[in-house]
Image (cartoon, rainbow, N blue to C red; front, side, top):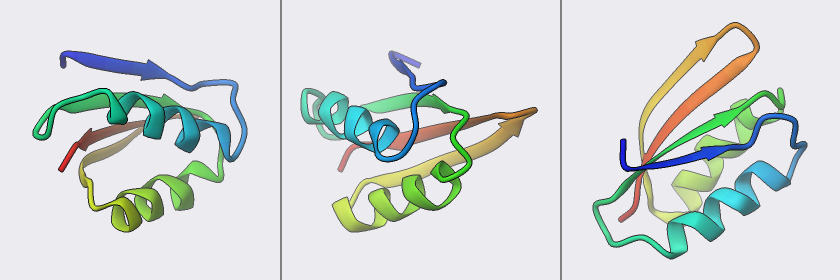
Amino acid sequence: MDHELDARGLLCPLPVLKTRKRLSALEAGARIHVMTDDPAAVVDMPHYCTESGHALVERREDGAVMHWVIEKR
């Protein structure tokens, strides 16, 4: 993965806001791996991807940490 964002320790809406900011600087087709531990991210991240038109490529849990791979569209 070329791009990574560690948003652990951040609460809603900061993980989504930081993801949006990082994605805005990337080319279409680029992917970013985002790590979150905010329980609200389970709803927020898929909603953000749907609303912004980005593809949620992967979602997985590793203990309390959620891993998201998002492709910019």
